[in-house]
Image (cartoon, rainbow, N blue to C red; front, top):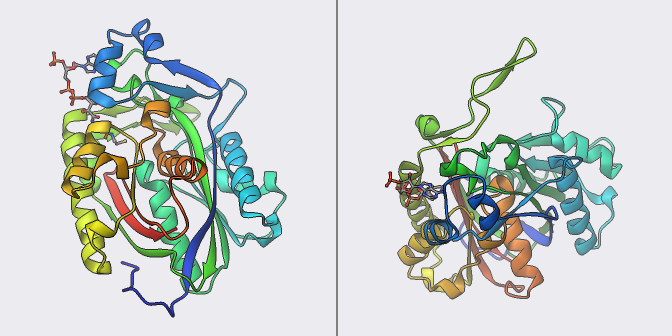
Length: 329
Ligand SMILES: CC(C)(COP(=O)(O)OP(=O)(O)OC[C@H]1O[C@@H](n2cnc3c(N)ncnc32)[C@H](O)[C@@H]1OP(=O)(O)O)[C@@H](O)C(=O)NCCC(=O)NCCS
């Protein structure tokens, strides 16, 4: 199922009217990690581009982060919570087995009687949520939608495993989407390939009150790296071809923040200089579903992304899942 259309000024669009974010205050630096595993600041920076990541406090949860990011986006949109028609939270680290973080968030925001649900598509979750929100708005189910990407990835990180512990951090990013006649989301395209499970997973489940299986992230980095670069390049080509936009028209590439070398390879494929790419992973590492909205919010707040810019958002994660979205901001 694909939702897209050619450039058409008379269409209804889902437009991003605001962004918001939240990062926990605790910083885990590369030097901190040097004391925990056999690694070095030099290795981490050259192989990943990450300088530090944020870790939530003991009394903080992924829903707390989602709430803070949501409040920021709601304030920046200058809307009342009563205007929100749907809440979608992209996460792999909800506070409870059930109900969803979206329902917990709805309750915290004091909103009654609207649909609220989580999406689990790992690092691609925010993009999956954007595609779904776009479809809701285009099919007249909703006018105003709150999307939050929030992940407490540190809960699943084994801080004795140098292959993974240097990569991940916690955070949340949010957007408000609203129906508009002016272009907003132009085209989305999502993919999944479940055969990727062996390369990237946290396999545990709860059974009879016990954790069964390994709850920590396992990743075969080299295989994930290669598949990510190929998939992200393919989806970028496909989005441009179907929408009739050109590489040259992209104002900003806002990619999932996993590894600077993946980001550089994707930009290179698009002939985009790195000064047209939003990079925030040095400050917070890979925050899973929070990564793209965190990067977008940063770019808006520092004045890089401006009204009318053409944004290419894209991401890749466990599943495998991947996708992209062209947006007029
Ligand atoms: C994980 C990743 C950074 C590893 O970088 P890489 O260049 O592929 O490195 P390799 O896995 O080939 O490992 C190279 C060497 O560094 C070592 N190494 C791994 N982690 C290390 C660390 N934190 N510090 C120091 N050395 C490390 C390996 O053991 C290996 O040693 P060897 O050559 O003696 O076997 C990279 O593969 C990656 O980013 N993968 C994709 C991650 C991703 O995109 N995830 C997105 C989905 S969420």
